[in-house]
Figure 1 (cartoon, rainbow, N blue to C red):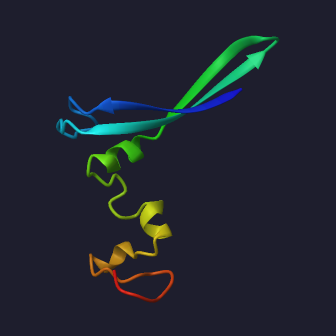
Figure 2 (figure 1 turned 90 degrees about the vertical axis):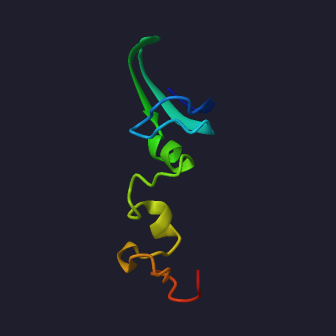
Amino acid sequence: MAAFGRQEATHSGEFMGIAPTGKRVEIRYMDFWKVVDGKIQDNWVMVDFPYVMRQLGVDPFQGLGWDDYGAGHDPADNGSGTPKLDGGGER
């Protein structure tokens, strides 16, 4: 069994080394249960912490994450803004 969900919270204490910002954040999660003979035998929860960190202004992948890659930005260009994948246009 699986469930996907979201919660909202206020960043009021240190989180992943990030000082409190007072910002509201969305926390996305996936919850999986292993059920055997109608009973829960195990449970796994995956929380999208990188998504929370990005909302707080921190890029946990330092420009090497999928969001930047998918947008066509080359993390090796040291901020020049040159697209990597589509080859055209300015940022």
